[in-house]
Length: 193
Image 1: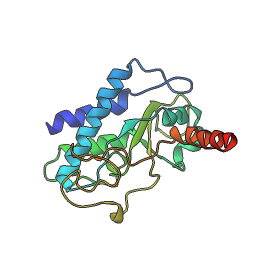
Image 2: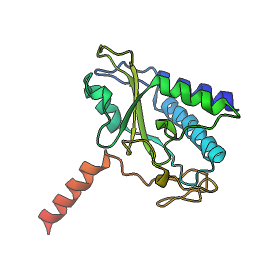
Image 3: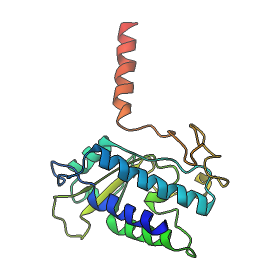
């Protein structure tokens, strides 16, 4: 089972692409959803292995995907205000660590940060000096996990804002896609009052 999750993780990040500055994917929405489900299975396995009570489920975020489309070479070396940038090689390392029964999984790796709730990946079309072409953005946290952010216990028992019955916390993160709509709703409500 560990090797199948590791392979699924590799496929997830190797195959998730988009268009307009990022290569077009041959995958439809259902396939992307299945790949995200595999990532969530891996996150649950890590939560069980490392006794993390507040590991969150991640979902695909089209807003992060649109940010990949607009990134310059300089943007790809720095985290944004609500996301971390990482490459395919970090996924390979995470998959190897997950497959190893004796090696501890590094929760500092972006795919296993317990408080991350959204993700998007793509192959950049922009040529830069580095070798990083497959990139992923994951948020809302933009820094490595701090020890104070990890709640120890049975998976799903340390959820602050959502159901954890599956072992992963649901919700808890505000998608950057919903922020403009929330502000727009507030402005309209103030105008109507």
